Amino acid sequence: MAIFSHNRWICSALLFWALVGCRQEVQTQLELGGDPFLGQREWMVERQLAGRDIVDQKILGVMRRVPRHLFVPERYREYAYADQPLPIGERQTISQPYIVAYMTQALELERDDRVLEIGTGSGYQAAVLAELVAEVYSIEIIPALGERARGLLEELGYENVRVRVGDGYLGWPEAAPFDAIVVTAAPDHIPEPLVEQLAEGGVLVVPVGESNQELVRLSKRGGGNIVESLLAVRFVPLTGPHSRSSEERE
Image (cartoon, rainbow, N blue to C red; front, side, top):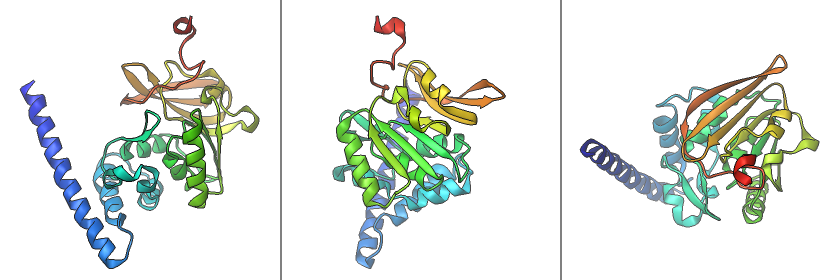
């Protein structure tokens, strides 16, 4: 207990001083007439991503470019590049930058890929994907979030992203198959419709579980599926009538 409390105090102190530095950087950039969050994005990439196990240079480059602060509510923008999830309304969150980068790297993307995202949320993950692949299809079950994300992505010029409101568990069958599928909310099992919509050679990355969740990667190879556990995670639950197992729904 004492060790945990001490470590938590140290982490809180480090985050506090990091945010102080970020605020000073914002003020400096404003005075210079530049992008006030440029320094924060660079700090995020170097400390949170490249300093850990994100090694894909294309992903690091995209994370340097995409303005994450525009995807969070204005009152949280000073924290946009801290390594933590943030509320975006409707009891949903935007994932911390490291998790976004980690899941993107796990997809093993190619430039001409077609990707399905389940859980548009703020639209940030879709923007990151759009910088890396040919087409992104994103489904959001909460209308307010879906419409907001669609508008922001259009405003930022992401013409290769399609957003629609619906039950992500069912996927987007008329646009299938997909080279990669990423799920940003947790069902209690791997959704079979998504596996069916995955192309041969494709990769599905999904958090699975309830109180104890693990990030799972399913690769479709040679007519079969290879499933591996990547790391322990904590996501909001996937909502909708099919997201829980049949035993739980009864």
